[in-house]
Amino acid sequence: MNGKFLKSISCLGLLVACAIILSSCGESRTPFVGTYISDETIADKGHIQLVLRDNGEAEWSWGEAGKTTKFKWRVQDNRVWLYTTTGAIIIATPSDDKKQLSVDMTGEWHEGCPTDKCIIFTRQK
Picture 1 (cartoon, rainbow, N blue to C red):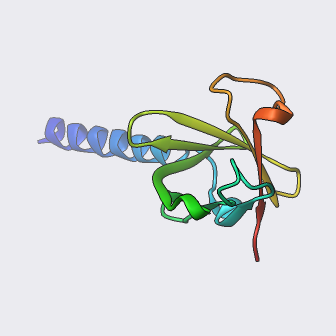
Picture 2 (cartoon, rainbow, N blue to C red; picture 1 turned 180 degrees about the horizontal axis):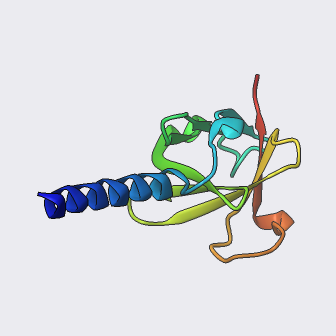
Picture 3 (cartoon, one colour; picture 1 turned 135 degrees about the vertical axis):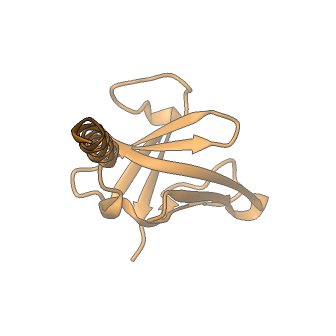
């Protein structure tokens, strides 16, 4: 009887440890939840609207082009990681006050965002 009890306690402890580890993955999304609009128009087809929802879903809508792309998103290393349904990852770097996000559209990692390949989004109220 003691052997079964100890195994049960061990399994419960393992489950609690796993739950703690999984809950600590990623950072809080709360500071970034909201609607952002690109500062510049893109290819003369209007502004891009980026909506980050608190449930980890996001939507990127491109003004006059009428195109919408859905994403999943999370925060890691104080950056917003957008995951497309096809497996691409887009990383947005926030300003210190978290009112702007800069998105490097080169498809390569840069410490800063190249000005000619960067989309700056400003948070709306």
